[in-house]
Image 1: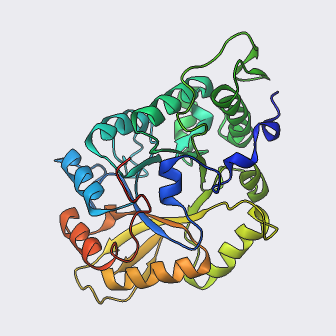
Image 2: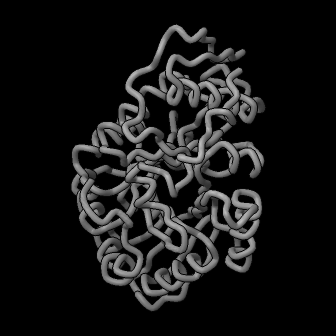
Length: 336
């Protein structure tokens, strides 16, 4: 098996990253805002209409949001009641690359145990070229047991399978003529190479949730972590615990931390922020105040899903443009 630790280098720390999307999204002492797709509110339906979805993406890009995140839901399960953005995430990113100029495009996250990692590596490197360095690969282990039998994969093996797939993925996308030997995903003796390689040396990988891994493993192998928001009273401690593992010394490479959740953005701009199951109900002014608090706690990104909001998405974006984005703009200053 390839030793993935040996593949890492100091140049992959954010200070040395050449990747525009990553550098624009994550910066020490700053916080940015991204939205989880689709850019549509549908609180009482299992799937969005996707009406004018390219228009909504262009508006988000022009407004200065930092990222659009695509979920990976291979099959719709009515018991979960949510089909996400419907379109396959990597295919959708390829389409959005032609419709947007600045905004980062990420997955939140690809269910890695269900993917063939060598083909995934080729897809991701290709997308990083097509997006001019705006592609971010969020990875998860999946949380829907009903999907796994469709792929003839044991749900309980997903943590180990995640690590195995990640080692092969990293070897193929980062090494020239890689060698590896996997019990699940084949072997290579170093006589074949995968092209293209990423355009900026490395396409960043971010853990979405824990992915059945320890915090220590995530901090060692991936380039960041986006997790469900903890209770607000624990936000500072949550960030401190990540830093204690990911950046134990003052001179350790910066590794970003983000939080995710549903967003019910109400019409009353002065409505105080309330934590609700798996998300927040708030007015836009209180959301800006919360982002400032999160920044002070050590959070670098917030990925929010407006699905549950009762108002049209255009109204939500107007409030974000008025009250939030002027204080927390994308860190990408110029079109890529």
